[in-house]
Length: 331
Image (cartoon, one colour):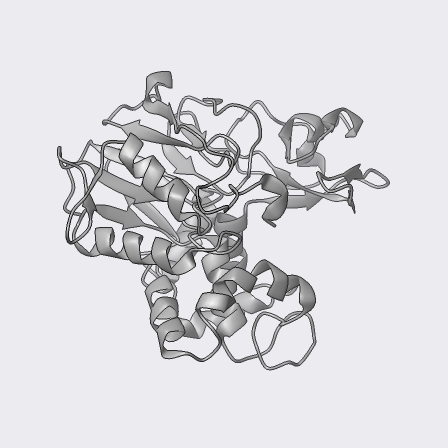
């Protein structure tokens, strides 16, 4: 990475929102040049994946990020939406048993989630194949001097499992069919799916909760970056009313490999958090706050600083009528 080793700006999930992306870059001091956006002080942007879906400007976002990356102004990793796109467009079998000929079923739910990408990148189009090939160049993690980048979860055991097959963390096309069978996974597939989607577990029976859309669910995403969050009530994520969850140890049901306090800083997105961006661990930071976009200016510190967490001025409605991404829009 041709970067100033200790001058990196970490930017979370963009989801095809070009206005949000350019607003973020401008606020961080980047400027548009003839070739690509760049920072006058040589800082590097680090993108945490999920460039596509939900917003309407997939192609523009991808083009901007690729140009920055190609000219050494940015690094980028894979998000779960990029993996979903690879599986949706790749011929093969899927875990839904629909036998429709693709690794991710072309059912109503999956197609709806992927619809804005499909409008710009139809199935089997040369332009689509080019972008999918670029997705495969993105590693699922970056372990850089002084910091780590992951889309959803840094679990050292899963990272080592991935490294055993791919030292640089990049997926190969031959890996995709293995990843498509989410209900019958190998250790490699489980590792990739966990780092891209985060740990999830079934609540002890008969507990359940209502999600932000009012749907009843029994499985919860788990907070892996705060060692003190050891009960279902404190570890569960994206639960509107956690008081209804059991106050018993998660370890009674599932192994959760918490991120150690002695580890270097790790940055991630994915979780669509509400409220104001905040530091809730000295060395781990979720930056995905759709209603209050943010980024982090990292300058080599071992312990994260509140002044490094930058809130991006927000617009709820763009000039062209496009609305900002809301948490309930993203699965």
